[in-house]
Amino acid sequence: MHSLSIPSRRHILRGSGVAVAAALLAGHRVLRAQDKARLSFAAVTFSEAGRGERLKAWVGKFNQSQTAAEIQPIAIPFGSFAKTVFTQMGGGAGPDLVRMDLIDYYAAVQARRVLALDDLLKTEDYRFTASDRHMIIGGKRYGVPFEISNYVLLYNPALLKGGRPPADFDEFLASAKAATGNGVYGFAYRATMAEGSGFWQDLCSFVYGFGGRWSDAQGRLTLNDPKVIEGVAAYKKVYDAGVIPKGADAATYRRMFWERKLAMEVDNGGVAGIFSQQAPQLSFAAAPAPFPTRAQGMVLTALTINANTKHKAAAQAFVKWALQPGNQKQLQELLGASSVATVVDRSPEDLASKPWLKVYDEQAPHGIPQVVAGLEAKTPEIQQIVLEQVLKVLQGGMAPKKALDDAQRLVLARVLRK
Image (cartoon, rainbow, N blue to C red; front, side):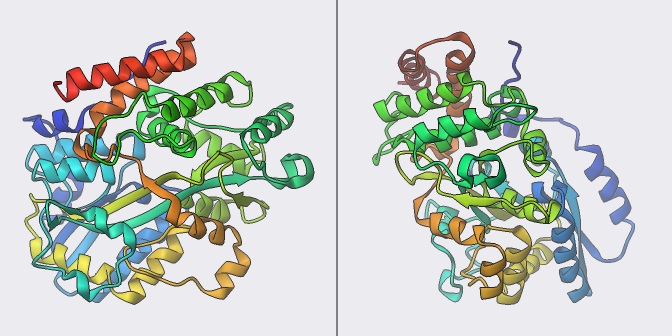
């Protein structure tokens, strides 16, 4: 099968003479003609159904509060976000403000593409959530959490026998098989290199859930640990069970869910929020993922300032505005079942009308970033090799142990030079 490779962030950052995306170029050409300091803010969320428009409206409140600055939202889809933004930043341009995934955050810090914020923010002045610790690299802060989203099992009770979620993995496989048929699928996940970043996220759900980790407490590589192998073997069982729409991208199978053509998926809180907004009549529910342990991946995105910005003061003003309690509360509400940089208590009304919020919030202690701990900046290169090996398991019939033994050897030799 022909596959697309995931570009290394490091390679992208080294690139020179690359063109800035047309959307950003067009935006800057218009904005430079104006008097105000006008900035661009790039985020995947702006491209999402429902949440995108609400986030733009939230940014609009900042614009209304300012006399000397205005922010232009830039919507870039998840699949092309890292390549687009890092190419621009490597060429000395790019958006002034960037919401980036944790993998990209570590790469950007290493390449000095984002500004340190220590002089702007004092940690003791805010009630930051526990995930804020990941924003500190080498003793310095380069960003603040923008969205923290846990993973749980989302399911449609009407498509499951008895309307109940599966309690363990065996029951999950049986439920997925029973729900599949007549245009309905029991489960969905990503398994193509064209959606490599999402493929990695979904794979982390299985590996973490089966007790595996990509590295140990000392940051040593553990790609072929027995628990990692067990998680990949479970991924293969689902692939072979005939219960997933093979090749479907996330946008497609998430739409299938709200169209009542998909019974279950393990997904993040932002997706639950989209379902709630896009299909208010859909009666869906949430439960812990049906794996041996509660550990699951955690999407952690950071709000950062591009080191290339010509409007540093205005960008800093936005970061401080975003952290104000009222603005944090509004941001958390529009994001769905996600959390934000600071502690924001949910209202009793929200918890009563959206019971899945409680399931996501209770998952927070079990969330693990989807990076290789201790080797965060090298995660993109490690991810590429791991996914290529997992595809050999899914499509070529290679034994999981053989594939992950090879992954361990290849990463040690090619990435870590050992």
